[in-house]
Length: 400
Image 1 (tube, rainbow, N blue to C red):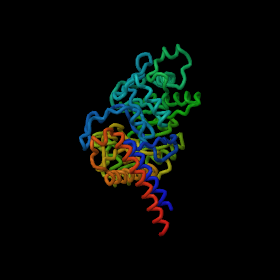
Image 2 (tube, rainbow, N blue to C red; image 1 turned 90 degrees about the vertical axis):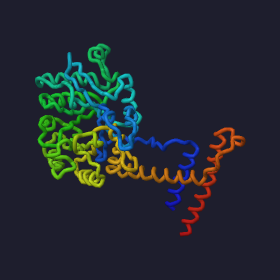
Image 3 (cartoon, one colour; image 1 turned 60 degrees about the horizontal axis):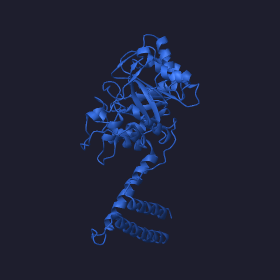
Image 4 (spheres, helix red, strand yellow; image 1 turned 135 degrees about the vertical axis):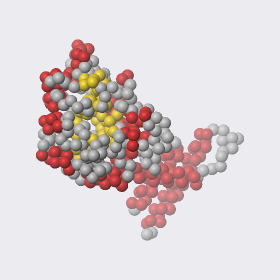
């Protein structure tokens, strides 16, 4: 019976956790699928949670990039931002308040161990950036490629164009241009796309326009460039198109994807704030509304997933069950992830019940001079309990 199989798995897991008090970690990190409609993308690097606390007054989130990459609720991480470009002698400045440049191995770990895609975003709300003409932007595109491409052709090149992440190569670039200047970004993106074709590695381009259509800054970029992902900001526009308003204009963007985008397979992401403090408006704390907005949009052909600003906020912000907001979003998007979370909750509750039932009196120090002896006894007690319960349930169900 299937019941026996389920019960056996739960009980075997209880033995494992009784023997070693460790969290359940699923090491099966699936390969990234750019065609999926359940991906979660997060911006990381501005450390938004440093300026707020969650509803449980948790401490400020100072966790590393690799921590976020280890979360199975995240598929794409966008490092934010290159905030000063083209810079002196085409040497761009990257401002990541959460990132230690000496620890660029985090990026390699994200890519190789956790199968995450790491993009580098240009722009942001603050900084000094922009181009005087298209020639300047095209030339900057070539430089940007040289300082980030997969292989360095010579020692001279490495010294002429300092690489911000050492010998690590990111997976693509994102455009989050918020200073009102639109000159040159389509040329820059097309320059990068041309360079991408010289590499065997797959690189991605994305943009993060605000939800009013057409976008005041990025319209030329999204109409003339083959973008893989568009992270649409359905927030901070309460009078126009926020996802939690009646003027939510997902269908307008869907029409763009179908009829205007140079990439007929472009993926649109529903951009949302990850907490109340992440944006001035647009945060959805009504989970029934959140579910409806996501699932209704997910039914669209070009839906790629949800983008959240920002990663640290998304893990500091919890629901009543202390589940991070990012996990809640992923659970809505992905049935497999949702079932994993439910199974984990069932296993945890079951194991706690077993431990409560099977908990012996506090061991006498004269009898148990080592905690290891106590652990082994508890382990073997649980083994016997598992065998008994497995036989009991299987025999019982076979008689039904």
